[in-house]
Amino acid sequence: MSDRATTHLADPETAGPGPAPHPAQAFAGRTFDAILFDLDGTLIDSTASVERCWLRWAEEEQVHPDRLRGSHGMPAAEIVARLLPPERVAASAAKITHFEVTDTEGVVPRAGTLEALASLPAERVAIVTSCTRPLLDARAGAAGVIQPQVAVTIDDVERGKPDPAPFLLGARLLGFEPSRCLVVEDAPAGLTAARAAGCATLAVDGTHELRLLDADAAVPDLTHVRFVTGPDGVSVQEL
Image 1 (spheres, rainbow, N blue to C red):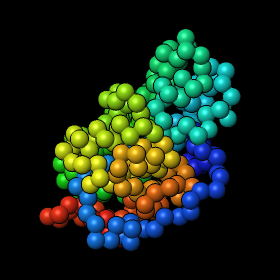
Image 2 (image 1 turned 180 degrees about the vertical axis):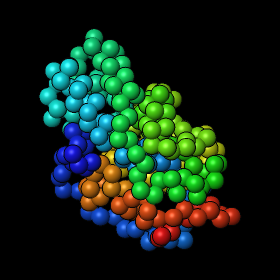
Image 3 (image 1 turned 90 degrees about the vertical axis):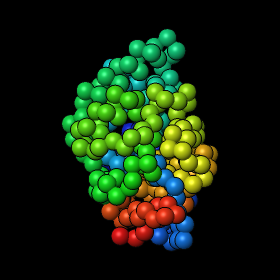
Image 4 (image 1 turned 135 degrees about the vertical axis):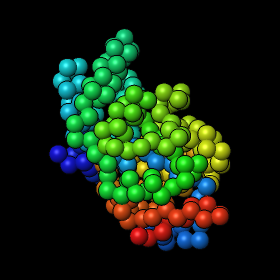
């Protein structure tokens, strides 16, 4: 199954803002103090696992799969809370968490991920994800992605994406102003959160076509950019 709009958690293919420019043009002459990466659909491809787990969950909870559309990038507990009565949310959220943590077959790094992370100094990079901490560990481990020193999960904030809290925390833990950070994301919820936090945004084609994503810049994947660190910060250049 495709990792774009045919994914049940992804948004339907509707008219978007149109393609954003390449970051080499959008951020020409600009540097950033830090790069904040989303995980699923950005650094890793977990589509097969996500599909299996959520379809299994939907079947067991008697939720029509179409009701999952538009949920990609949101915390699992928030998705469950939208679809089930309050008395069922806690147990059902624990169920989907168990499914996802124990099913990582087919989780792989996206093209350019390992090189991008290796190119950045530890003090200038973070992962900011809607995953729980155990799910982050499971998926990063399955994909062979070495986590940076700073990683923000849904366990660390009261409200997840599209709320800006996760990116605000990521910037604070690194010691930088959000306005000096670049967020790399693949989902509308994450890009909304990044903009609300005051960060610059770079969209990648992970679970949504780029024409559907509202970002300052866009690339198909991280093989199309390189991050170069200089005395003034990190610049984003064409590879």
